Amino acid sequence: MKITWPRRWQRSKNASIKDTKESTNPASRLVFCLIYEHNEIGVLEFSKDQWRFAYSDWFKKQSEIKPFANFPDVNREYVSDDLPPFFESRLPGISQPQVEAFLKGKSGSEGETKAKLLKEFGRRAITNPFELTPAF
Picture 1 (spheres, helix red, strand yellow):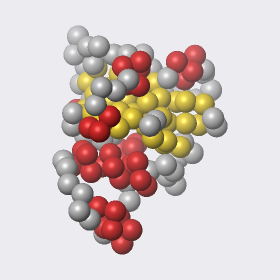
Picture 2 (picture 1 turned 90 degrees about the horizontal axis):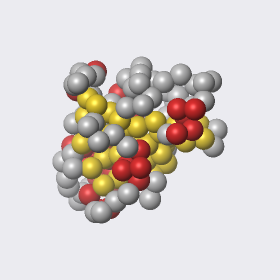
Picture 3 (picture 1 turned 135 degrees about the vertical axis):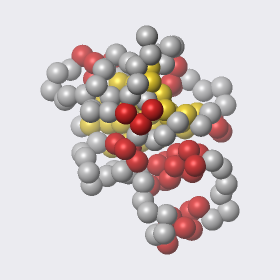
Picture 4 (picture 1 turned 180 degrees about the vertical axis):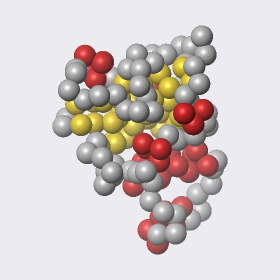
């Protein structure tokens, strides 16, 4: 059964949060943990020009925090070619001097650039209380 999600999100046939934490080629893959008050909410991964998000086991068992609107089913892994708006809001404007300096001399696809910017500048956002930390 294929489900169409906002911004081209769809269910992965091989959904497993365990898969998002193992790497065979770390240079082309970035993994981030979304944290709230020292608890892992989920894992965001960028690999092969695709973004994946899956909730953690802790999040699935708790009932205090509701699932995010773009990711309503806690038991699914979401896959997209686009970085979802929840995470995109963490990216700084590319015309900022420190961002221009960071990007100078770096190349890659749009997704790779966004992944690098998230790693460098996306730990905190003024739009929500969650922390995004690189997993490695």
